[in-house]
Structure formats: C-alpha cells, structure tokens
Amino acid sequence: MSVPQSYYYHGTTIEIDGEYLLPKPSDVVDMENVVFAARTRWIAAVFSVPWDDTVVQFGTSDDQYILRECHSGAFDRFKRGATIHTISAASFDNDIRLGMYGDEFVSRRPVHVQSSEYVACIYTYLRTIPELKMLGSHIPSPWK
Image (cartoon, rainbow, N blue to C red; front, top):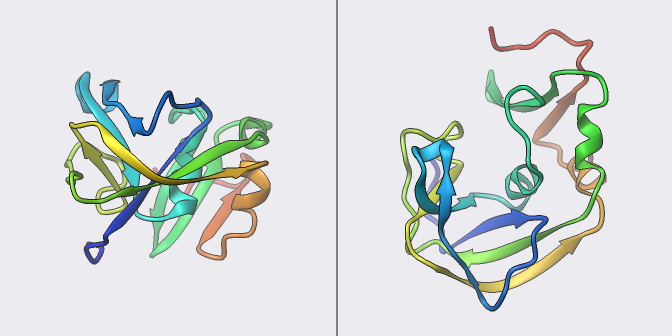
C-alpha cells in the first residue's frame, strides 16, 4: 500500500464548472456518487480518457505497471488532451471495488481543485513514464 500523501490527482477530458470536482454516479462502485483520484499524475492521466476493459487493460504484473491495448488502435483514444487536477487527499479513501487498490481512491464529497495542468496528448505523455510499460494488442496479456 502507498504511503499517505497530502495531494492526489484527477484527470479528465471534461471541463469543470467552478473550483470543485463534484461526485457523480459510477458503475465501478455500484452507482455511488464519487470523485476518483489517483496517487500519481500519470495514473490520473491513464484514467482521464474514458475506457473499459474491452479497450485497454491496466494493472501491475511482477511490480511493473502495464497498459495494454485489447485491440489494434485502442491507444488512439489516448491521443487527445486532458486536464490533470491536483486535489487534497484529505477526503479520499481506498475502496476494495477499485481495480488499482492503493493507487486510486474515492471521495463521496465535492473536492476543491488546488491547481490544474493541461496535457496536450495523453498518449505522448504516457510514453515518457518509465514506470509504465505500454503493450500493443499483438503482445499476449500478462493477466489471464
């Protein structure tokens, strides 16, 4: 599990109205109203673009973070801009239903945005992250 932090990150392609991220229903947590956050900027960038497990797989294998496209061209959806918001970690909790337990968190309250950074191309940004291995669909999944 990660060491407690003062700040987390939230990535999105949707402009926010005002200074707060508002909880919204998510099927990841049984339609509870939540705001998601990630431990790092780059993990928030992965989650900034809408996708599901039929598009890409994201997780760890042998302590290596892996993002794998499920079909050729799936990474194309990451070839767009998004905003990464820095937010206080104070109201966030782990939730066993999250796929990246310890790396992603939820808050059930509105969350004040401390600062924001626009990333022009999420795909290009992710390619610079040494902790992340990006695999094409032609490479077998490390997860069965």
